[in-house]
Amino acid sequence: SYFLSDDTILVFEPPQRNSGILGGKFLERGRIKKPDGVNYFVAPDLYIGANVEFHRYKFVLIDADEYAVMYMEKHSSEFPQANIQFILPKLKQILESKYEEVKSEFQRFDQGNSGKIPASRFREILQHYGEGLLTIHEQLTVSRHFGDSMEEEDDLQML
Image 1 (cartoon, rainbow, N blue to C red):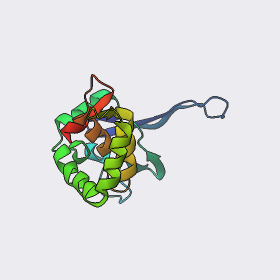
Image 2: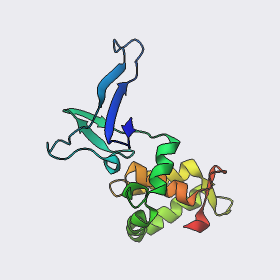
Image 3: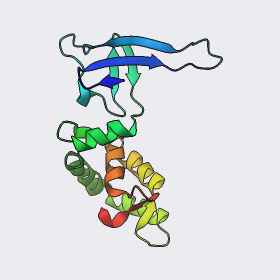
Image 4: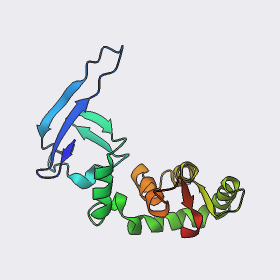
């Protein structure tokens, strides 16, 4: 858990059944220095897919709750991973180098030529072609930006 009010972090480990790991509090709430030993972790350092190291323990942040994601989107000038204007040039780079392959993928999943594909397929395409260029959080941002939250399909006309 990250606390915006004072830039502190608290880490709980979930119990894992039949593993011998009891779970519980892993790291007390406090400010945590980055591995450089000088700077502290701040909110923009913590995004989905980030690799972080707290006191020599390495973690990959795999999820965030809806409130956190919405907060980052609302304050996208502070969170580049949630800033569609920051991500669009990366998408352009992907499309410039792999346009035909990406187009073929969209056509494969939009056989009815409706201009829409299932959101899960859209995310798969982003993950496949954006690997190395887009972080997991950026993929989520693109999907949320171009997708319809009420539908399980993303509108291709928006792209």
